[in-house]
Image 1 (cartoon, rainbow, N blue to C red):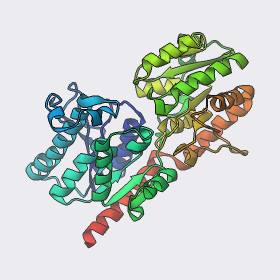
Image 2 (cartoon, one colour):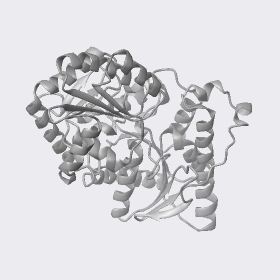
Image 3 (cartoon, one colour):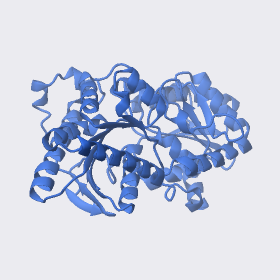
Amino acid sequence: MRIGYFVWEYPPQVVSGLGSCAESICQAMINKGLDVSVFTMNDGTLKTREVLNGVDINRPMLVDGSNILPQVLSMEDPGRTGTGIKFFNDVLMYNILSATKLVNELVKKEGYEFDIICTHDWLSAMAGIMVKRETGLPFVFHINSTEWCRSLGKGSKTVLHVEEAAANVADRVITACYPMYEYLTMHGFDATKINVCWNSVNLAKYDPVKLKEEDIRELRGRYGVGPGDKMVLFVGRLATVKGIMNLLEAMHKVASEHPEAKLVILGKGELERRVFELIEELNLRESVKTRFEYVSEAERILHYGASDMVVCPSMYESCNIVSLEAMAMEKPVIIGSKRICSSCDHVIPSGHEQTGILVDGSDSADIAWGINSLLSDTEEAREMGKGGRRQVERYFTCDKSAEYIVKIYEDVIMGAGRK
């Protein structure tokens, strides 16, 4: 099987868990004897084509058309995504150039015979639509979230249209959790075309045994986390939907009961300035440390290893790879679960196999309760972390996900052949 794999981010250019997850899945497919050609973004510093670990990676060089986009596309609409015209330009150009490269260069010029194409979310969905219409190849649309959910009902009509168009054109839709499956069917997506495939983690990378104690001590010391302190870790985009402001309000409550708790915020986003201001307003300079960066995967893994718990207080989250990575690193997790929550599929919130705590990400008091619960019983928290590792080993490995995805692809290809 030869797969055309369109994903907006792919190492070394990674801004979220999707890029790391895509790399692990592609590698698992290569290990199974499949051929994979990845089409991903280029920030201008990367090779336009290379083979890494057996994966054929294509990164067309972008051009800037953002100065003409306002003439053909409303400034207001893409601006409502919080990313602006320049970002929309880059996504649009990436899709057009990637689709053109697959069709004209790889297929027509080099004679590649693809069996199927897949795209991830709206960021690469346009390429899938174009290639499907140009070649007739079977097309699978992976949709881990929707614009309406990500923006809490205030999103871009353009992005919504792209998502709906891709779902209609695709031969199959794959989503990351059963709550999202229910959401999609409630909003008019064809239920007969949707499969659920959970996210996964590369256990060879995310292994706490491989970390050195001196590296952990050094990192904790960098944030002022002493031997008797407890490190609470947040990893993710600094956006309203991620619950970051509610988490800071929660830490104001936690600090009074557990002064040994130190929150480390690792990530970037549009709320960086507001996060800094709220830390000052709540007098949390000693309890909260920030690092407004996207760090390498190796350093992210070290942060997990150095922490005592990981908190993901999202008000909506359909693709929470951070919680899976934390569980693989034997850390108890605190998960926001009020709305759609993929973590509800993999976190066990009670019983003898409990791996974490579910809270209302929109309620700072509930988040504080979750953090305080783990701080009050550190032995139980450690057992939750160990249970989390076992849960990931049982259900959420890259090999298991790749095997299931390939079966879906095979079914789509066979179905296309019967038409």
